[in-house]
Image 1 (cartoon, rainbow, N blue to C red):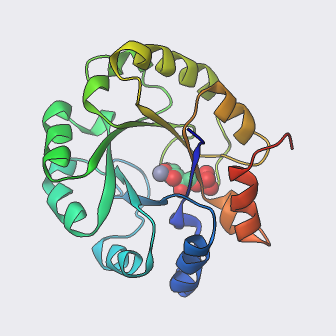
Image 2 (cartoon, rainbow, N blue to C red; image 1 turned 60 degrees about the horizontal axis):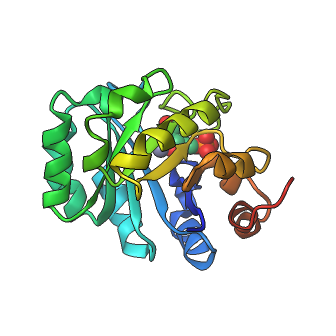
Length: 219
Ligand code: DX5
Ligand code: ZN
């Protein structure tokens, strides 16, 4: 399978959100990555349901929702009602991760688990069969535009090895600091989905930046 590209709208121009969403609609991107931050699980607040409703109104590609919030169970239904295709919750934020994952699937969404850079991959061994995707954080969650953490390459390989037997169709998504220099190596290491915020939205030609991430060649 060719890898997927998920522009992170956290880096979009919120004063021109419709324009930026239409740019992504028109591009070769596969998903919209939507970062929800609560100011508790992460030291930043992004946006909530009214903005998500606007995103859902214009977005013509699946919404990949990344919940950086404590106790996400309380809001799963609202996110599915708001148009989510995928919902990822943080391993570090869920006391009853298995229950939360089942809840997401029962509501008809694909379920993902996101992991912070310091969380051992081995901790996923008893949830890996139940999820559709693992979102490997390649920065500490909370902000766009941060520096990529190099140990991600090793973590992708470890995760691919772990998933080999238990969930061969697992999607591995990389989130944070993805750029034109590391994208090819990430896909070669085993990444299936690349999230990109700043690399897309700070580019002069945003559609071309997406196209370059999709049709990778050595930079
Ligand atoms: C970080 C978010 C990322 C972020 C990526 O907490 O989860 O999705 O928007 O932005 P860039 O690609 O700029 O690192
Ligand atoms: Zn994210």
